[in-house]
Length: 437
Image (cartoon, rainbow, N blue to C red; front, side):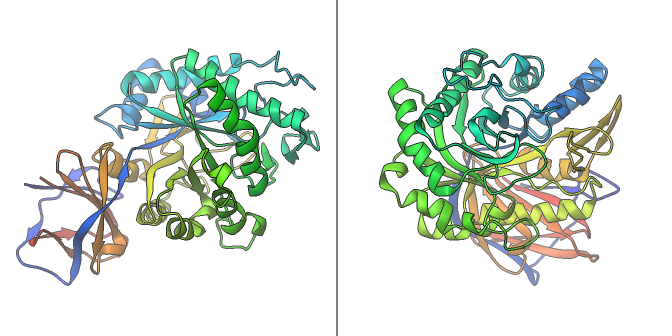
């Protein structure tokens, strides 16, 4: 049985029954199984919850269902910022009292008013949701210079011991709220200094922190949260400029994994933005290390169909080189898409009061996450349409193919698996999900 769901700019999520007999020049031949996929999801940010909180209850429920219910995108992965991200309502850390190395003032009270209610609404709809977390900056008193936008964490043992305990307290505090953090990254985008919360954390230093402080502490306390390198955004920025050279593959992922004492604590590598330029080398050198895509690129706030096509390109690259999950960035933003620090970005859903817009990237994500179940296998392929499609096999045996046609002309696409061919007419400028049972 074959079913095709298609989205165009004008008509979203409709069934395409236009099949053809015979094979075409545009082929997509499934050749084997690759990595196991364990979910799709998005990031929980204060600005998104603020938009939801200001909507009516009926609209709020509609949007939460659209993101997390089985009828919607069915997200099963959540990203949690530790303290302020660049889409927090303002700067904060979980311990802002200066020189509080014993962390006596540590608190998640602010999160209980914003992030945690947001997360719990997702958990109502997806009880088995899993979470990864990272800070955008340590508390400023742990840094040089002492500011949230830039600088680097101090390297003395007193600070690093305190920072390891900071992560321990975060994981434990969220556990008490019924939110288990499965994977922990010591720093978001450790090669960038920007006007919003950021902090430099060189690869060698991050590996040393995991090896000498964070790993032994979690091991001694029996904390089962996995420790991952990242979230890595190197060696190029998103636009191909040669920036962050000190965070190249060799000076970040590779230097950490070559350290045997650090390697025993490092469960995987998380990549986003310019990290896509390092992922192929990581997979080639370390075929057994698990890889994650940790943040979707964010665009410019125009939420265009063309940018959604670009996001498919990113998804193709990440899955082709072995990631096991994919995390979108801002699921919800107000009209304009501005951050607290003035960055205008895309979102899956635009919400202003009770005015809701489901943007092209909402539908792109849904074409994947609605159908691809946890435990699915990513499938390898060959043929002339292989650069425009990704295939997966669900645990129940169903094959799911997500194909795009960014061209202005209709194309017949022949899918072949186990010697069986089916040809589907792929309409121009479309996202398509092909289901084969």
